[in-house]
Length: 126
Image (cartoon, rainbow, N blue to C red; front, side):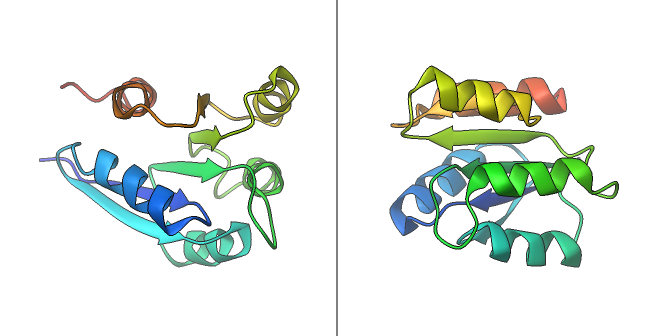
């Protein structure tokens, strides 16, 4: 059985729990949570991840800054990143995709949309 490790980066405990709970539906999922981009970078340096789910609006370091750092760092640049945000604005979506996000999911998060994106990015059969 395959194991997948996910890094969930979200400053809201409720949203972090929702995303983590959704990802646990994937067989073999191991979830690590981070409260902001700075915390996420620390956790990225401690272990490998198959995928990152990051909010855009966070204190200290937002999701777009985190995404740009991940894309520039050779040891992380291959990790798929899903951006999650309340910012439904097309400009934010475009910026996230230009910075290298693999998918963009608006809040409120639909579990089915999140799982579909994760399964497509990691080529996981249901």
